[in-house]
Length: 230
Image (cartoon, rainbow, N blue to C red):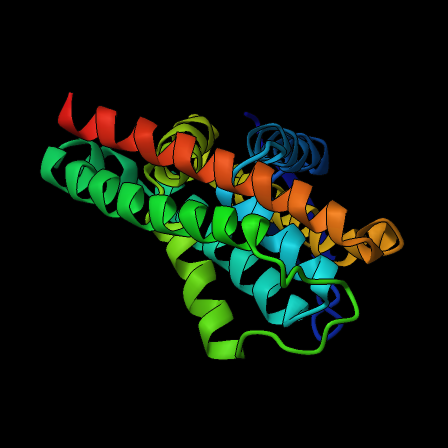
């Protein structure tokens, strides 16, 4: 990439110009959009983390901190991947094994809890006041985020490889675009879920959601366990 130059006139010295090397805005925009598009394609899927964020959004519990945590975690992982951490993680199979087993146990436990809520007579509604504390909500969010090996595959390895292929001067733009997509998605998921509040005013809707959550979590747990032990 051939850099462009911005000429800045120094008012103190009429005959002096300062040339500042700067990446072309066209290339910067392209890198930003490439990061945004790839991140959006990877993150927009039915997964454990997304279902948890949506459920908290429906209940309007700690949505802001959860959205901020998820977006910030993705931004850090993407930046680490573009910085070369993905190659290091790929060389440590024991870490992937531990994450897979830990994730399988956590997702299996959460899936069973969802099935228990579905079978219980005490089904939640959107207006129900009892909920979890902020600390517990963030702890669950952290577990959904960091105990899922697929998170590292998407953000650190895949995003890292794509971002690492960018010229060095354009990589920050790629990371910014990818992180922006993550923040936009989680904000839309968390705050947009309340649009469905009239639907979830009916206990049956919560039973259906818990059934979907339970089936998804148990399936993911089985997949992670087979991947770790296979």
